[in-house]
Image 1 (cartoon, rainbow, N blue to C red):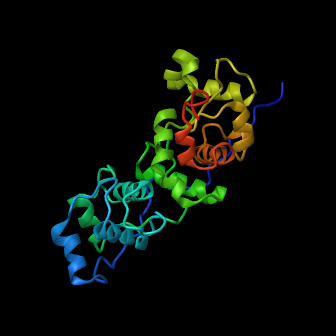
Image 2 (cartoon, rainbow, N blue to C red):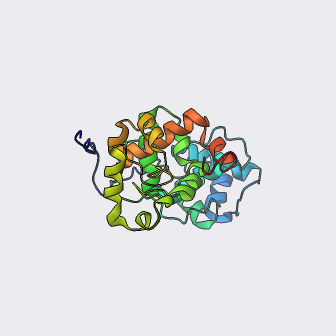
Image 3 (tube, rainbow, N blue to C red):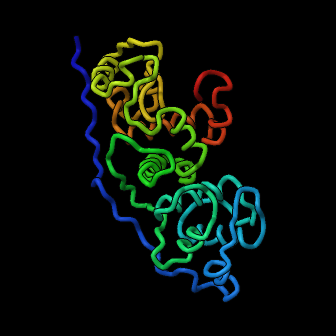
Length: 259
């Protein structure tokens, strides 16, 4: 029997990371527009339009959060950018611009979107959290796909639905073994040897079948239970099968279970 391939060492990173800060605030805006951030602070939600939405969009863009054109329309990309900004700035990522979000956007200590490629190495990356955004921003850069994929609501909904962000999670068809973490290394070892002992061989953050793992993980089977490999594999699979995370989420459960 051939030796089991070793999982590749993950090259990054410290358990805590320093986020880049902004020092400009809203001093560049007119007095009337500054007052929207500092005094009026209107509640903005999905579907709204107007100058106040454009102010938020422009400020998010200046802080590095990708949302496309600042078109004064509160759509999916704007909500995704707001959620990412909220997560990095210690605000509940509800995608709604309330008083706390206005304050953070106006702050001279606002956290910019990280572009350093650093992420904390963990066993769980919950959807809509700064840790998950950092991991997938790195994965997106490595895979050559747009940064807005990493913060897209659709991607994080897929993470929630598939694995709740748990690295290496075996598919539910493994039964009791899927719910006992002490069994996971044994399942991973089986899969690295090409042995499938459940109805589905899917594992990881993106729940890729073993055949897709072999295609989309940079290290193939050896990448099982490695955070960056699983994140890169998920994005690569989405690109190949669905073209974008938004389309992957629209297709969810439409043809077969999953995406």
